[in-house]
Image 1 (cartoon, rainbow, N blue to C red):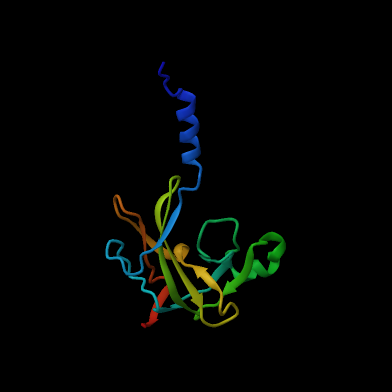
Image 2: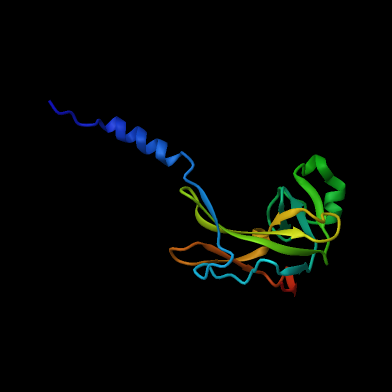
Amino acid sequence: MRTRPSFACFFILGFVALFCGCDSVRDVSHDPHYPTDYKVGVVYRAKQPFVFESGRLWPTDTAIASIPHSITEFERGGKERWPNVAGFMEAGSTVKIEAILLNYSFEMGRWMTVTGRIQDGRFAGQTVELGLISQENPFPRKAMILFVDTNYLDRIATP
């Protein structure tokens, strides 16, 4: 006698496959299918101070309540109000691009991550993610591609 797999078995296998970390990350620094004006080795100078929070740079003109919007506001509230904020990366600080990655997850789809290393100032040597100070340009069926936002960054050196 031949038996059929039950619906419950397929449901359980599907549930496991959905939530088992089907995430991936790959380097697209030189991949023409993901065009960006960020390039590994290029150095950018900050045109304004940025909030340095958990390895990310945030612009102060964002509407997010979980970050301070000025150095003065941070000095008044400090670590008690914003425990994940290390401080402000000063205007004029430089960041050298280290990686351009394509991330994928079932829940979020595909998106680009650009990371760099701060070259000078208080946070020299720290690695940062630049997505929040970049322009986004969605390419259909590809990914959310990041581009340099010239309101925030100036290109000053190439490799």
